[in-house]
Length: 218
Length: 272
Ligand SMILES: Nc1ncnc2c1ncn2[C@@H]1O[C@H](COP(=O)(O)OP(=O)(O)OP(=O)(O)O)[C@@H](O)[C@H]1O
Ligand SMILES: [Mg+2]
Image (cartoon, rainbow over all chains, first blue to last red; front, side, top):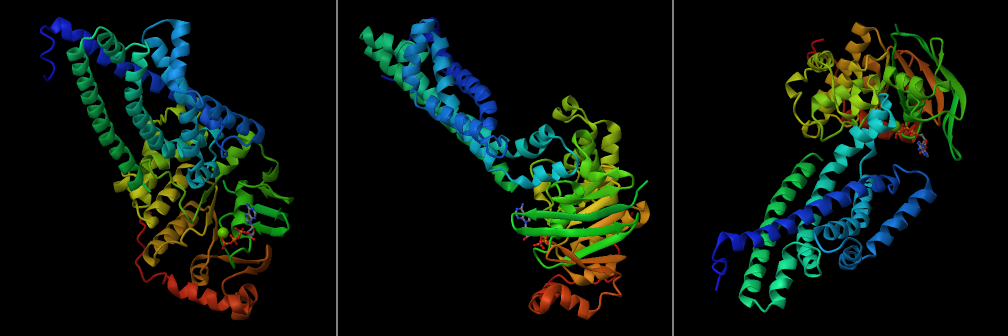
């Protein structure tokens, strides 16, 4: 009953392994792409960086607007635009994460202490240098920990995206289900559970280390 | 090298609060000046005006031939580098190591690219280590700043000021949150900067005995105005009562006993 005895040869199994890897890569690239776009936006939305109220509030409404789109709906739209495969999956994850990341990052930026920034201003640092040396060291651990956490959850939602046709292991799973290959489908589900569990476990350890050092520094 | 610092009828208002009210002072090169006064008297505001962390509402400040109040852009950043400022809360970046926190003092000299990459020359690193060594902090160079004690953090902040090649030292209650031993070490470090490097030191203090022990000149503020300006000997009990008010005096005397420093009781711990 237990996998992988369903798959007799490596050739058969390698397709499944590739699917799992694809889901992981989709989640990874989607998370990274979303974060890369969200980071500059988060600075624009932080009160202590952007003092233009109108622009800041506009950017903040923008976060909420993007956050209103469900990943699954975005995936369906992108599949229409780019066809089946991992690309629409990556884009769907990235876009749906932009709003969340930008909001969380800008809150982290607002929660930093003014003290080191002022200390640096008092010794002649330019505004960019103040941000680089006074602010970023304070927000980096928060950003890293948010990234890991959302990567974790994107591995899970990436599986579902596959089912609607956006590549990865979910795509293989829906293929096996529609072909009534229940033993294979069950084995795939089993492997997905293991993968998600392992990712959660590893990222949990990493996050604890990052946050741990962060708190020790307080 | 250093020049006279002159405040000419400087005021700073916050709404209806006159935090600093028409203060005129002339501080000669190499003086060690202590600023005392009750909480809210305007001591911090005055130092921040000098460093140009805030702008005056009225009046002007000059250093030698330079009009500080007119500086902008790079010239303003250069001035801030020249008058290094240290704070009660140390204002270090907790998550960076001690050496990097000191090297931050060099950044005003760096262009955008080299500062973003945190690239420092060997000469700068040597300078930073020497500054740390002067404050007995070289062994901690690679430790994270957030893990140091308050007194150690304050000494790192002074080392940062040294690598800035400062011309004036501004210190805003640098020992207010330190125990007597550490407070003495920090005050001794300021004294050595003053006497060995010949730099002007302007320090806000909340304990009268510290001011008396270290300062050539004491300036007392009340409600944003200068109430007293003279030597420690001229600061009699009657003057003190005027500065702090009779109710403030009780509270003040308590502050004196809680962090009392006997200068000389500890052998000077700063080899410099
Ligand atoms: N940024 C600000 N906005 C509004 N009011 C301010 C600001 N900074 C200072 N003040 C006010 O100006 C007055 C002087 O403040 P300042 O911090 O200079 O006093 P201080 O003598 O340093 O007091 P302490 O001993 O408590 O540090 C106070 O009434 C304070 O509330
Ligand atoms: Mg103050």
